Image 1 (tube, rainbow, N blue to C red):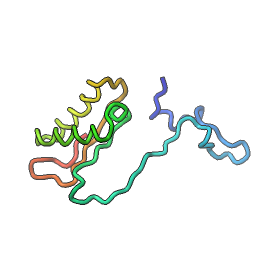
Image 2: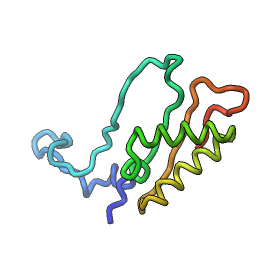
Image 3: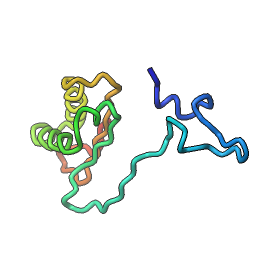
Image 4: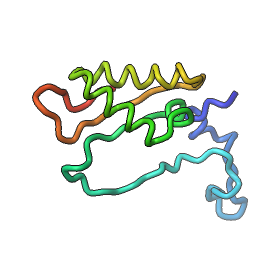
Length: 116
C-alpha cells in the first residue's frame, strides 16, 4: 500500500527530464498539487471543513456540510462535532486515515472557532 503523504518527496517515485532535470508532472503518479478554491466569506458562509481523503472518499461535500450543520445545531462543542464527523466516515466504511478540521466563520459565544 502506498503512503501518499510520505511519497510526495520520495525521489524513487519521481521522474525527471533527462535533458533539463525538471520534474515531469505528466508521468509522475504522485504530485503534491492541492485542490484550491477561492471565495468571499460573507454572512451566508457558515464554516469550512478541511479533511483527508478518508473523509471525502466516503462523505461527499454536501453530505459533510449537512452533517456538520446538524451537529452544530445539537452541540455547542465544536470538538464533539468534528469527532462525530470523523466517526461518521468510519461508520460508513472508511478504512483510510480520517482527519478533519472545522473552521467556523461567524462563531457565537457558544462555539469555539476551530476544532481539529
